[in-house]
Image (cartoon, rainbow, N blue to C red; front, side, top):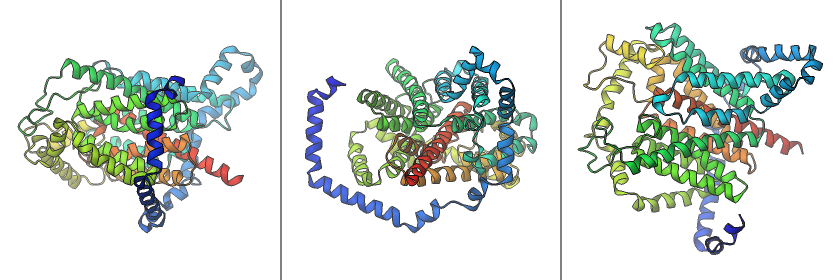
Length: 511
């Protein structure tokens, strides 16, 4: 740290910042930023979008919420009663004390679990790893609640009504499926995500826990991105199923890291890169800021090498939302920076961006029959859908002859259409409701919370979700269960951060 502060580069940076503070450009951008803040504060449209709905207001005191909270905390309650009866024996046991201590630090355990699981190469990956990992974390949490049940409980209230409705829709997607046997195994993937959300939201008790989980995600970015760079150095063979060579002449092969598909790897980076950036901004020590900045740069470079256009649009949206939530007054500077960066883009990336609207590109035109098949499925089964999972949807579309193209139908290449045709009307309404409620709550919390690690990481998680929701217009990230888990992990981080921001706001008001 001392060498960095004494370096010539640091001195030059300090002098440059001092000049900028006194410049006309700074005064102009500051005035533009204040104008943006005033527009946000006085916007009637944003006021309507950010207000809490009737369903969300009624959730905390509802019978459904209380019943679900009772059920998920029943094992912890029973264990606590057992501890109450045999407290002396448990307190004298070294192993029991160790289990209690580990249970109270479930967030640390989760950070290690995600670091270990989410960098396993695709050819060695098994979806049971996720289930075993998060089931173990749940048991660890129950061990922690055995002694401190009143203050260490699974937080169903913060998860919200729409996320609960989403899981109900998933269960119904199996029960009402046109092919229940094909849908049953997909229930496990969604169960893992439910465990991930419950454990993450409940285990985070302070900003340090939030930072630990963000650090775990950052390690995933670092390891996977370094391997992607290694792939680029070694050379990546061009896969014609990923690239239209006529519309993208001269484009190199697309890196995929540990995830079997470049689009899948790019979606992982959309979800986790904003978290890395948030960790960099809230790190207290310069060396940690430098490490996080290095991870972000390597991850951003890897994202570029995926040549995933939908993901590029998604990360651009995520960064814009991050600036909007974190410091709205920096929006003009962000726009100027984006415009200045365009000429610096490599020609292969710039040409790839310009091909987004090229309808002659086969990867673009091939989505039209996919969307048509998905819409036709919705028309056939608008309420129940075809059944949970891509396998049931594929069988339904094939049996009813709804898809007419040469390439096989894998999924709808749109997260909203795919959720509707898998989980029915309840599924899509619950999904959209859960996303909007979480992002709205996060936006409201960060607007009324002072600068803190919780505020910064909440902004990062909310912006990552926004980026993925935009990317989901042209792809279906949940086709890979590991990406689905990461999606719901970021969703849970956003809820946990919002909860911490609200607690901080309440503490400030009580003083």
